[in-house]
View (spheres, rainbow, N blue to C red):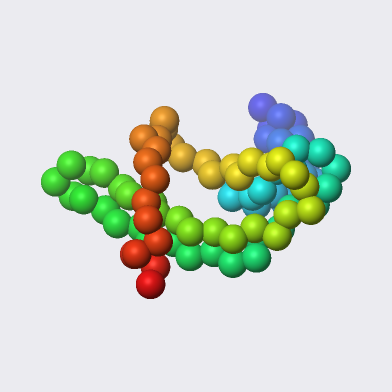
Length: 85
């Protein structure tokens, strides 16, 4: 067991750092975040967190995705930019 823990510690220390939220290009072209704003609101009554994000990307790629890890399957909806004015 001790050897397994030491091996795990060594492997995790050698792993490359990874951003939690990140753009994923559809090909080999780079994609970067030019600007980003976010509002996070928690409703204690419903135990619901709302994450509202506005981002501007500077893509060379024609297609890309954006990865945002969540603890469960999120409910997605569109929002207007009025919140960020």
